Image (cartoon, rainbow, N blue to C red; front, top):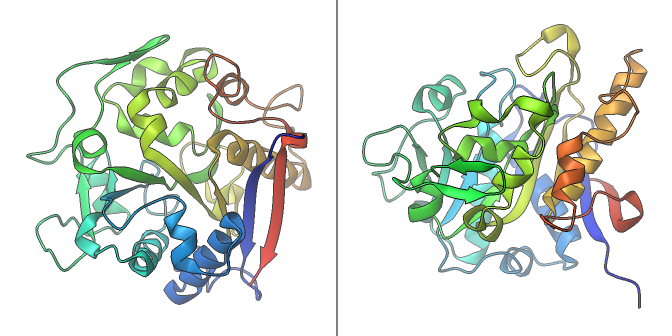
Length: 304
């Protein structure tokens, strides 16, 4: 009997990007999330789809990426649309935490810090008073890092919500790379194109077990010149990608990025045209975080 393939779902709005990638329409984004979620979970019911990943008793983190500033970050509207959709499972807003490492970066990207108002979705940063990183190191392979207490102590399960951009050091910023925002010392792990460091961080039990779902913000894509924002190398296809498998979704994302680069006359991310090394490492037997083989990926493209 053939092994089940890892499903990756790409969703686009019927009339192109939802309003624009910079200021997307929240209603359309929620429809996109729920459309993709139902396809991913093989059910016509939104609540049943969410229940595949979470229970109504979970406190759910949404790990966004705000490092690149307001023009290349996880859309606040996408995070909000996802948080509101979780209400279908009976999860209250106060039990959803949108978070990243820095309060300054979150605020710069348009997120409103809040973890005191029980009527609202919570938004917190690791560097605010009362949060911080764990005192002790978590170790796997070549890394030893202190993890954000949002991840370890506040949330019971998590949605990984990365962005898609070219990265001059490691090749691509995506789901796996987004977890560098959960550790205190990512600056130590950029040698050798971040390999095996990104894979090692994601293999930490606290990250592996709590990350249940990837909802990938590909509304705006930085296809060259990253990780900083370079407006001359940006496309706004208005996509989101969903998967349970962070390696498979990064494999798809890297392939899409190379297709865009080719369209603009640019070489592939890797000289040999393959995947960034850290993605392949994440799929090896030691890490076993998912599949990087296209023949083991069930890729579905959907339009609202």
